Image (tube, rainbow, N blue to C red; front, side):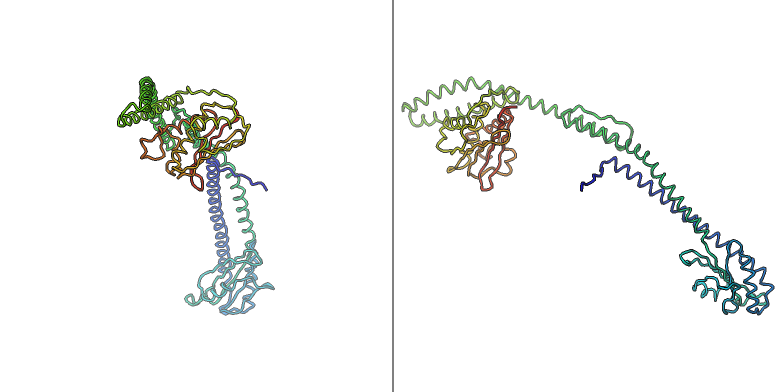
Amino acid sequence: MPQVRVPRGLRTRLVVGFVLVTALGALTTAALTFHQARSAILEGVQSSAVHDLRTQIDSLAPDLPSDPTPADLRALTLQLDRAGGSRDWRTAASFQDGPLVVAASAAPALPTQLRSEAAGTTTALVQRFQRDGRPWLAIAVPVRDATRPAARPPLMVFASFSLAAQQRDVDSLVTAARAGALPVVLAAILPALLAAGSVLRPVRRLRSATERMAAGELDTRTTVTGDDELADLGRTFNTMAAALQRDTAVLRDMEARARRFAADVSHELRTPLAAMTAVTGLLDEDVAAGRMPPETAEAVGLVADETRRLTRLVDDLMEVSRFDAGAAVLTLDEVDLAQLVGQTLALRHWQARVPVDVPEGLRVRLDPRRVDVILANLVGNALRHGGPQATVRLWARAVPGGVALTVTDNGPGIAADLLPYVFDRFTKGEAARTRSEGSGLGLAIAYENARLHGGTLSAANAPDGGAVFTLTLPWNRP
């Protein structure tokens, strides 16, 4: 059975909350009004009945003898029954706690509690009770002996009558309260919608401005009206946006200056490095021919190694500067992937050290030079950092939409704190290896080359140890 999705937005919650508060207020008002009206109706009937019964007794009691007989009491109750009028009450009389004497065939309905309390009272008593599921009112009125006013009243007159008419009035009040509450609740929806709209309008503006800023439009500002808390929030957002735009502009300018500096330095170093490389090449020939003393030959070898390392660093910096300037371009060609992998390893004399599993006939459209750079960096890192007895493997497989090449080793893997930054510039496997053979730019260049192809390059640690680098390339550059 499909589930009904209940809207949970702020607008819905505001409207529902407003309507609930209105409904609660309407119900509370209706309940208080009902209670007051019900009390007024019942108390009014009660007071009127006691007054009328007392008036009738006061007019008839003087004619009673001081020691009335049952016949006298029956005559009294008969006259009182006739005086009930619309109340249609039934009365009974008891002299000196004797049995009830009635004029009708049946005694009036009287609750036991009222009978027991009336035995010792000197004032009128009333009690509401239920009879056959309907409300009734019972009254007990003591009648004093005029010759002995200080003595306990010897005569007690009881009366009871139905409150059905008053109950109908109360039921009408309940019906009216229910009928009036529903229109109030329905009418509250419109002001609730208007109030929610006025509250959420600045929130929507803030959300729209935040989305534009997230998209890179740092000059975005929101319109602020009013002096409430939401207006203060809007002004705070504008202040934050201005500070962010200013700081971002400063950082971008500093980054652009740093990139230009690296590019300029790299370009200026290429000419003297070319000369140094030529000179160290000649010196290497002299060393190889044995025309130099051992101490000099060792120094020449050190200079030649450092010159080559510096040349690679400058070449890497130049490559990075081209990525930063957006000047890096692809020279695409459809190549056999197995042949390209074999050439990459043979060029660096790694074919004997790296087992390869690449299906024959797997042809991909890519830039051979840039993919060669990626694979050389991945395999070279695995051989250098996997340990003296490192076993490096490279294999390829077809995946949906392209091909994936994976390079693994059985070394110590990548430190957990370094893994998220392994493709950042100048990141090295060991912080202490500041004079390592690598420049710290190899993986960053490999990552940019993969991205230039529309592919991905990821790094992870294998469950059983060792690093795993996966290059994914599409069949065709999008």
